[in-house]
Image (tube, rainbow, N blue to C red; front, side, top):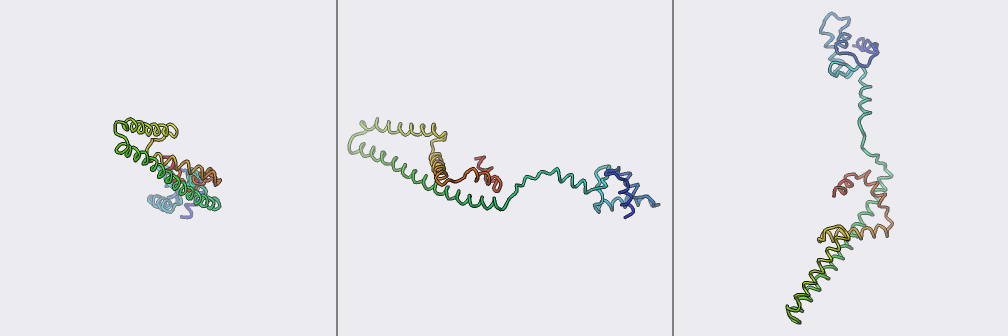
Length: 206
């Protein structure tokens, strides 16, 4: 076997036809099948690589060439930047919680502003005045709500829904807190793309 390997190295080529490979493996042997047996043993042992009708006599070079073609998309996760990202992530999470709390408080206050005119119209309709007087007033109050929703859409480009109101106020409070705390949102986003790319992708899709 070692003699066959030495003979193959002496050929000085990386690739040879399979028929030539079998011929070299069977040299100095009277049994014609011995060449096929030796060829199979060399292939199974990883000494050569058979691709179709050709044989690679230097499989390590082929392996290195293929490895060089494989793209490596895994980002370098430096320990220092990961620690920095984790610290920024904690601060960002706290900012989001505070922004959500502040936005919900505003929505509760808005609920009071909606209830107060409704109760006032109800009392004026059934105790103080009459429906004949209150009908146009209620109409204009309802129109005012519609105009406020339309103005909200023009300003934010979001649908005037309860979810849209909450999202708009949340983003507003979030930006205010980021500015007041001097939080480096650009640095956080950059590190997030490196260490938590799945969150960046989901945010982009949403």
